[in-house]
Image 1: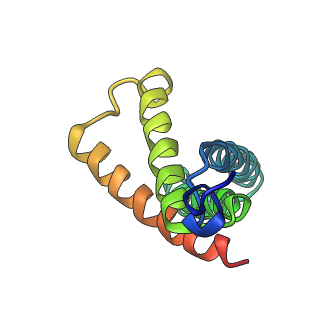
Image 2: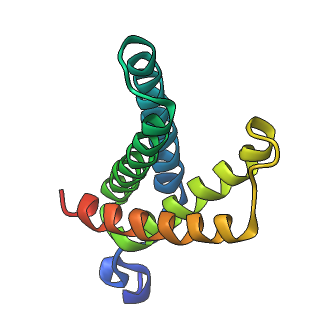
Length: 131
C-alpha cells in the first residue's frame, strides 16, 4: 500500500543527472563559442584583450544556457539545479585552470568566480525550468 508521503505530493526532487547534463551542455557550448572566437581573432582585427572580455561574456552566457537546460530537464527546482550547475561548472573550471594556465589561480578570483557562477546558474535555472 502506498502512503501519501511516497507519492507526488512531495513535489519536485533534486536530480543530479540534470546537473550533469547542464554542466556538459555548458562545456560544449563554451568550447564551440571559444573556437568561433578564436577564428574571429584570426580572421579579423579583434585584439586578444577584446577577445578575453568577449570570452567572459560568452562563458557566462553558456553557463546560463547550460543551467537552464539542466533545470528544464529536471522540470522543477530550477534555482537549485541552476545553482548546482553553476557551482559544479566553476569548480571544474577552477580545477582545470592551473593545468591550462599555470600561475593564474588566486583565492579571491576563485571566490568571485564561484559567486558569479552560482548567481548566473541560478538565474539560468529559474528561466530554464519555466521554458
